[in-house]
Every structure is written in structure tokens, then in C-alpha cells.
Image (tube, protein in one colour):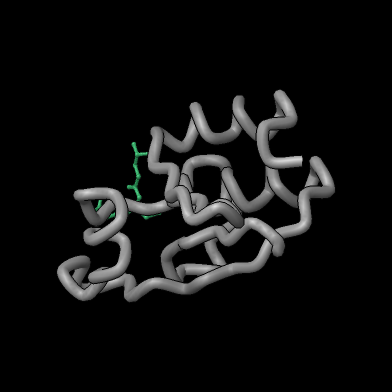
Length: 87
Ligand SMILES: N[C@@H](CCC(=O)N[C@@H](CS)C(=O)NCC(=O)O)C(=O)O
């Protein structure tokens, strides 16, 4: 199974200042097999699965095939992607 990127719905905002885009771009550039799961943008209280699996509601989050959900700062996720953690 591909990793799943749980991200916000503001898909048109493609600048490095946007955490969800920054992580999606890193996955693309690395050639990682991934699927996008669009989470509600507002209100963030609707991100129930994210809250259940990570204990908080901020995105982006990466879900692994083994059921692990990884929530770190987007800059940390980008480093992990570039280091090959999700290859
Ligand atoms: N500093 C965080 C910021 C993450 C962030 O602001 N994510 C947005 C979506 S792109 C979000 O979930 N905002 C709502 C919230 O922070 O609860 C990071 O870089 O990961």
C-alpha cells in the first residue's frame, strides 16, 4: 500500500510557505508512492481520524502501511522524506 498523506484542502496554494504543499511536493520529488487524503480545512475539529491517531489536529500527517500515523513539523517530515524514510 502507498503511504497516505493527510493534508488540508487548500490544494491550489503551492508555495513552500504552505506546510501541506511542502510535504506533498517532497513526496512527489522523491518519487514516493503516495495517496492524498483530504481532511476538512475548517473547522479543524472535524479532523476526527487525525485527532484519534495523532492526538492533535494539525496537518500534514503521513500514514504508513503498517497503520502508524506520523505527525511532525512539516520541515521534519520533508527531511525524513528526503532521507528515504518513506521510500
Ligand atoms: N508549523 C506547522 C504548521 C502546520 C499547519 O499550519 N498546518 C495547517 C494545514 S497546511 C493546519 O493544519 N492548520 C490548522 C491547525 O494548525 O490546527 C508545520 O510546519 O507542520
